[in-house]
Length: 355
Image (cartoon, rainbow, N blue to C red):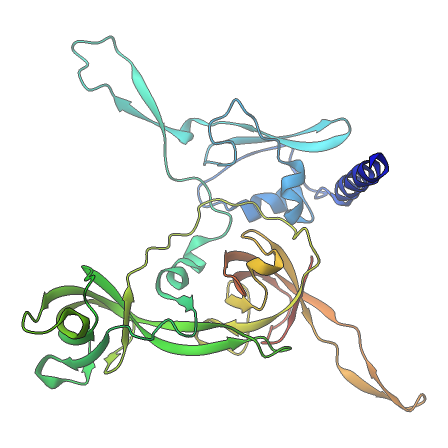
């Protein structure tokens, strides 16, 4: 038993030493940096490291600082060495707090209350993914079964838009005040096994419940809805799902996956064929494979197969690294990520691996 524990401890130590040995500082790194509005954690990581996904290895959590993982504009980051290893230390700046007056200043001595504000820098440029997060869902393939559906527009229109009235039929025994309208999109399958990984629910719009027909049973009611937003024209048979608020987590650290990852790009936003920087992609690896938000993956172009005229056989050329992506949302069988670097146009079926 002691031998097993000793071997395990040695393995952990070896992994830790290997991770530290892999850390390479950017040759032009600053000794300190004051965070500015508009910075992202990825940008700051790249200022200090040639491999920004090693950020957790150098980040020194200061227990004296409230929410030490959050970084605000005005904060000062200092690079120091502890036992010969680089570490980044955080000094809070004045912008991390706001001042609010005490309720009754006439009766109490002058003082202020400090409150953390919600403008911590994000890991990624949020404007590149917020629209995608707000209006795109990946659901189980049976998610639309039994859900309410559009049967008509006002004056029997078959195409409807924002500000109009529509009629929906379905089960409203647990009626909600608002819904999202979706249309079944692409079914994602694993390109190697054929396993169904999820269904893209295309965003159509949002509606608020106006009234329910009182003369019908609630499990097959006719509901009148007001359209509050449209991303595309509403059509007959479009489906309703409960509205979903999904704000991205403001801060997570870029990191290398702790396990071996070997996957592929299986989808891209709005059917784009040429993928570039700041495009959102879907990969066929998710929570069950150990993928988590913040994981950075390298993107590889598959090497071509050529004819060796002397050897008289087919030879596959080496795969070539062509970019980097960071995962920002995970599902059980797949994940969504943002392309952060692209040395050349990327495509569906390009491979993703450990960086």
